[in-house]
Length: 100
Image (cartoon, rainbow, N blue to C red; front, top):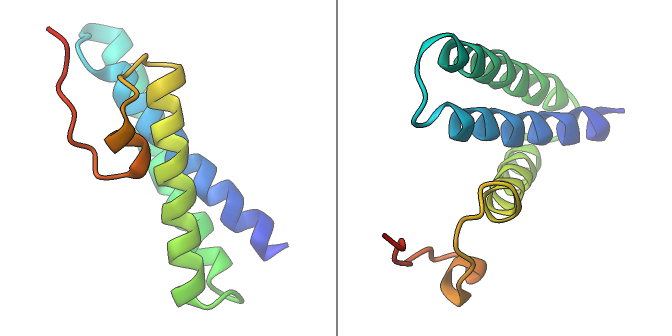
């Protein structure tokens, strides 16, 4: 059960980064909606991580949580936000030039 909670925590992390990406470049009510969703998912992610660490060692739970968040965020960036897919980005070092 705690592993499922940990996976949900990681997915909440992906969700809050998605909300942050959606809030970029907009204003008004729509911005507040995305920032509010960001805040809720941010808190849920931390709460679920804390709950999971009640039985899963922190040294295991934290890397799993951040790994789910990192990989999920890269995939959201590529497939939803149409960010560039380069060799270095996939490898994980991230140096790429944004097309202008």
